[in-house]
Length: 437
Ligand code: ADP
Image (cartoon, rainbow, N blue to C red; front, top):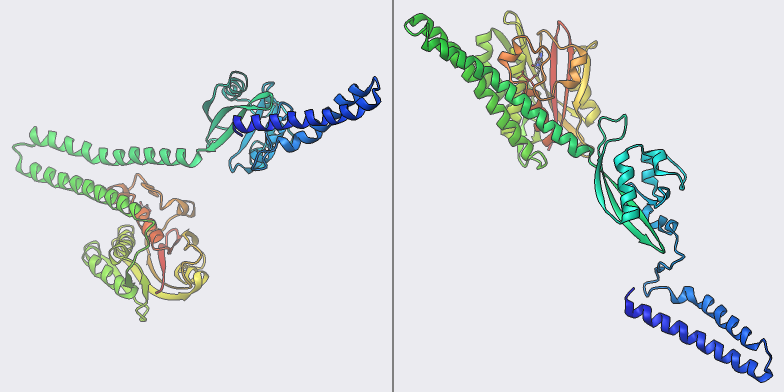
């Protein structure tokens, strides 16, 4: 309320008091009783007390903090805040809190000391500084016993009625901290992956420029090894770039349409030579109905070729068979059931499920092999970046550890489903299903 308005209310109050006093004084003057003036003053005060609440209302009807205002009057305001918030008085007692903070810090009553529910000295000092000295501050806070949760607590001095207090508001920073950690882990992993081929290359270069310099046979051998390392670096950089590009537009649904039977046939053609070189047979069984799905052809190819390429890589050269089967399904349950069941006894898991409303009719592609398979405990982690089932084996040399992460992000952009099942020693089957147009 403005000073001008305050002054007007005060003047109005005084005028009414004066008027009431005059009326009463005039009445009592007639009888000239000795106690008349006392009654007049008493009457005026009663009138003022009766009128005061109305006069102290602002034009918009909200109460004005008078000297008698209590910190607990702020309860409705705290309750309206979406974030955990509480008010601490100068004595360090909680005089108000909202339901969110009570749930978060697991306390019920007001009047508790802040130190009884928070044992973080920095938070207690900051609350005291705000309530007593009017100093606002911000404190980063991680609840005891929780490694994941992170909060930033804002302390603001508060003057209400005749009292001062501290308003504490908790901002949840958990997802920001997790994202930062993921980013730094990712950078550390990516540099580690690049460091290995670089170290091999510099060793090979050293040998080539020294002992092997004049030896033509050794030179050819080392040049061949260098080409392998360069290829490994190139694949890693390609996959890293692909992943960041996919993440950039992951929230933008694809506009095109793809015939999934034709896409599967195209992916098989693209990898036929690789399979032949490894002595692995590719078998294709299309659905025959040429189901059209919502998708971007280039990315659907990337998904199918990554899955077929993995199946070829992790299947033994002699007698290896990779089957690519397409089919259609009504509803998500049926899609998961049809796409993801190759062996009745297999460990299976949905790596991604389509969001509700993604569609009712689906088409799927399943890529299965008769390779070494994957133990059940690894299945949930397969789409993590750089995750390898057996990091010390051949897989580090032949893969980047990013292929399935790329698949998951693309399928997610397409609002589709992705599942895996496997029986160790018998093989693995990966399937994706996308909504039909
Ligand atoms: P990579 O480039 O190393 O193949 P991926 O993300 O494509 O990375 O796969 C992650 C890991 O999953 C692989 O390192 C491998 O251990 C395992 N894997 C993927 N596909 C198969 C498969 N068909 N059979 C057995 N293991 C597989």
